Image 1 (cartoon, one colour):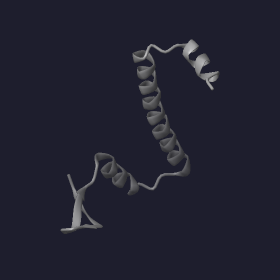
Image 2 (tube, one colour):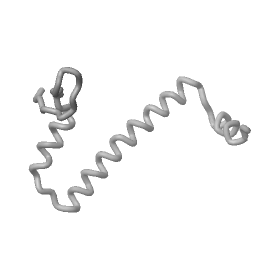
Image 3 (tube, helix red, strand yellow):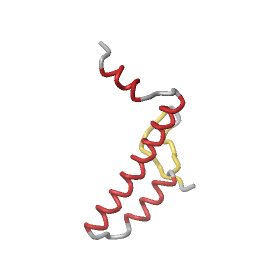
Image 4 (cartoon, one colour):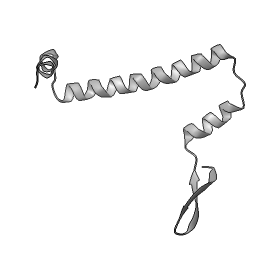
Length: 79
C-alpha cells in the first residue's frame, strides 16, 4: 500500500500513513476530466451504494430485534 507523508506530528516526529483503497481509486479518478453529467451520475451511484448499505444494516437490526410496525407505533407515542 502506498505511503504518504503526513504533517501530523507525535512525540517521534512526522508520522507516515498508508492510503486506503478508496483513496487510491479516487486519486486515479482525479486524473480523468469528467463531464458534468458523468460526475453527477458518479455521485449518484456513490450515494445510492452507501444508502443501500445503510438500509440493509437497518433491516438486519430490525430483524434481529424482531421489530414490527407496532414497534414504530409505540415509539411515536413514547413520552
